[in-house]
Length: 247
Image (cartoon, rainbow, N blue to C red; front, side):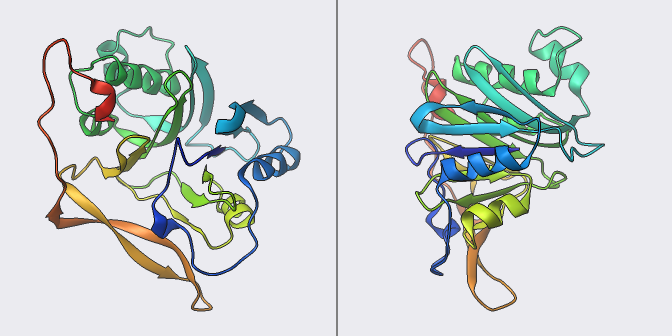
């Protein structure tokens, strides 16, 4: 799978970009290359925002992918949820709803004044997963990886600043050069909140320098600093609550 989004929607951390001068592709050029290299690819053009693409080619047997859209909310999900029956009941979905549909409904619950903070909603997803979601109505982006990093997932920066996300490291190497890294496990990234840990929601994430076998700087890894706490504000309650700002 592959998703590329412009900086105004998904501005990755500065530390994700390598200081090493190298050849990189623009985000949309990388999408075109991905589509031409993978037969049967489904690609959704999001206009000047970016694009999302998925293919069943080389799909993992135990962590299948699904790609769909509900009410202009696009989602690519890879993996499997262990508590899918419980989640269907929680979000009022029928027995045929798959993981992708559950993630979209969980997001809509958050967006439309849901009762839980984003970290709690992601924590409640039990299983092996990585997903990307884009809400074209509000131009909001959300992505997350399970606490064990069970599904390989990477992010990087294209030559034009677009954020690139894929489960294939070769796609990142082609488009981002050394400006990519594994997406931190147990974390989520959103348009309004940036990178956060859902396992340690009150702790900050710090960039850890990463070098390749030649000693050249690559995109940084990120880890939780349990001694540094994030500044949080008390959410408003009542009819004026804007839960969209919570994710």
